[in-house]
Figure 1 (cartoon, rainbow, N blue to C red):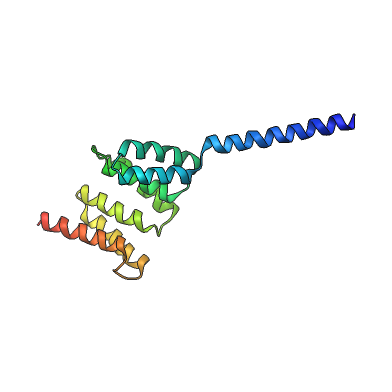
Figure 2: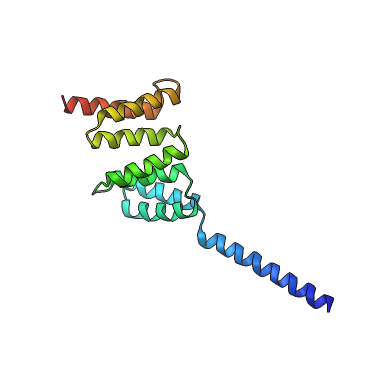
Length: 153
């Protein structure tokens, strides 16, 4: 009888372990989807990027990098969705207030939305975060602001 109970318990534990492993695999690893999304973004395949990011955010909703790229994808898509971009950039910055990419990209979104003063705020934040004006995100946003000002005298 003890052997039967032991066998039953062992089988139960193995089944639970297998179910958990399957659940983990079927829920997917957000890093894999994040990497796939980054590759899709590089290829400018916005639909695939969005699909991969949607899966990644379900697996890891508190990942600032995923939200940052969701905002980027919404902003860079052939039909930009600035409302969605702002939503995800703001979530990224709530999760990580020092996220340099999110500061750069939300600043660029503000320029698209004709709000250069808001972009300037994120440029100032980048200067503080970077400790100087030479980090890539600062330089990129500064250039975008300069281009915006040149085209909107």
